[in-house]
Length: 255
Length: 216
Image (cartoon, rainbow over all chains, first blue to last red; front, side, top):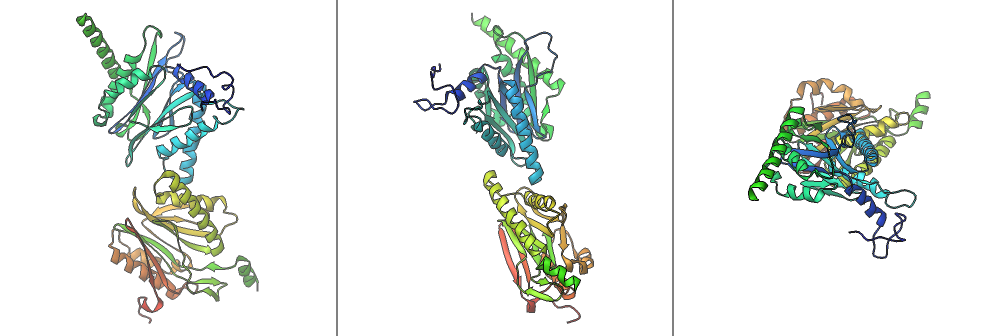
């Protein structure tokens, strides 16, 4: 686990003797405490899935969304402190809108991800502010450049991915994602797999109920980032639940 | 007297003829080469009004030369930075949008209009007009400058979409030559740039090689 950085961890403007900025590492811990979000790129689009934990029966269904629309063609799934994530979503929206206003076309995802990552990084330089306590996954689809997926973490680095996971079950989710042949799948096939992965990594013991948020952008949505339609989501959830039961059954047989 | 006074404040202007035409696989952008002060003094016989703002994107300028040079310099800088950040050549639409933003935000001070044309990987050859006040319009071909008024009939009747490179060169040369023949503030040589996926080729047609029409 992480060591305690006594004395060197009070501000983001201090390095430790072994070259670490502890405040940034602590920010990443905040992300690891949040529930899981995954994004996967397939041959004709991107699918996002978020395990949204429901802490109270009184919550309205569909509130506190963790997947945001940044521009018509860009979606963002977040993990970590939700308030930090919302403010970064606003930053990303402004970047995308300014780009469109200046250059007349959709912002390329790599550029957007670089710009927001630079913004996140700026908050890791000064003692007067704290780093953002959230990671997020950006995805888009463009006719010419195809589907793109980028992840930004609190240190301000952005990486391009075929599939990535953030949040408490990210290791388990990554293992499941690696089993997929995503380059050969279409969005419709992938939606079901994403739902299945979220159901698999959800911890029934520690966390009680959860809501599955699913969204996609790709050829199937003509390049617009949208929430997955209700009927397809229900089909995906059914597939996920059935797959889980099968695994449970097969475990029993082995015993 | 008043007219002379006004012009000397405005300085050198390009009474001019400029055009850009899309053909099959590229665009041809062209202009005359006369810069004038007032209606009677030719301050340069051979200026190049075709400014390269990026590898495969050119602008032709009309109006106040000083304003046009300032705007194109700024656009060239912005586009160069933009293309390094994007790690790819800028779209022609992006270049035209940059020009448009400069013209619109500074419309009270500036007096210059542009034609932006070029080739990009996404949409191929494109032609955009950026007018004085900052309007941006995409067209298959466009003409501008004071000399353009004399050739609207010619270009409207002779333009066809998807011309070959040779047909388009002839079309552009004829149009500019006709305009230069009638407009006193357009003249000199014809500058043409042919922009395709392979690059930009500059062609200069000196006065004695221009096409001759019935009156000569």
